[in-house]
Image 1 (cartoon, rainbow, N blue to C red):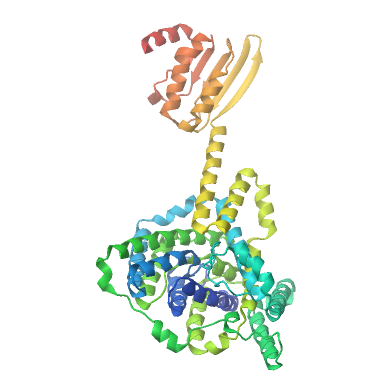
Image 2: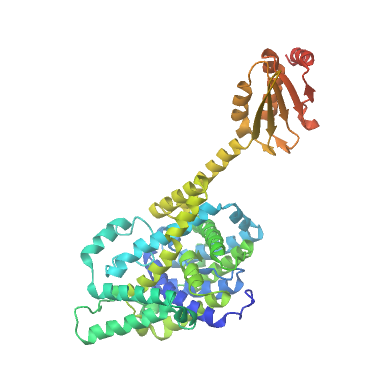
Length: 531
């Protein structure tokens, strides 16, 4: 199969697109609700993210739509700017800024994300999905589907809602969730069912859950899920018309609009780069996304979203991983999910409004498990503490705070480990004994920075009196000025005072360190000259 051909996996991609649609629908609505925006603005963002960005993007698997990470910014901005119509102008400007980022090749920033941090982000998102969906599986739907923050809108933490949900279990919702998980598990494990790509397990879950709940309703059972807060809730045509907004361009001169635009552009771009990098790691064919083109595509998407009354968008891991897990292999899947969003949302909302949130919670629980399964933690543990510790800290920080701050903390920890490793590999130390005393060789590494100064200084200070020392820089491309000065000072003072037979070799001419070999007399003269 040609993995890069648009029509190389049509049946698999259409089935995956259907699953992504089922996952995206409640998230689009939930994020809009959490953002204080019209409900249909989330659908608009999802449609444009799927069709337009999906077509323009270089990524075969990444899915774009309204992002949970932007909800707090959107909620505050709508209030501060005085209306959703003014906010839409900021979304359009943010899109323009993202296109500029793309032309400035800011996408290369993604090359500096360590694997341990990306893996930690993915595992953390998986854990967040699990923690957030368990209450929905219990039928305790107090929290919005699009709220991925540890501190929820209600003021409760994720753990508070999780524990509280035990006291509010809806038996019918729990039965549907457990049955849905069983169907998904069977679909994964039985080879025959797994090969039927045109009928994904998530679709079976949705159909079975609707039919089972209808049976509960018709039989007047206490298990029936009838209240709308336990079901998908698409806005009516009247609500869509009343909530529809167009950008108010009279606010272009408003300084606050530009500040919001820059904020959205920067945060949306960083989230997109993180999610695209993560999606590339999940890609079974290990393809690489042109991140600069991705930023341009996201920018065009946000411009259109702003013009049509939609929310700002980013590439999102939850929908992207659902795409991959469901057999999506080309852009067709994400584009198809965009068409399904607009088609079903406008044509048959009464059918979608019958879907229990408990069934969709089961689909998302499976997505979360695949992102955070124990084998991921075991794999990072086997890679050593320098990989495992940044990974775990990223997981904890993303779960406990939010995606961007958590990743920033993980990056900081990774940098500390890089610096520590750099300190260790500044040089190699070799000590040999001979009849005339110890012969010590210090072979400098390819790069020696100022961070290595302390380690080299301590090593030179511990050289025994009367020993023979060789400092070899023949393999070194760069030595920091501070380290060069340290070696000169050692040559001119310490080596003579401790009667150390010093050999300096391999230093490039521009360091102004003359190659020496046991030249104490010369060193003494140089010392006087140095003084």
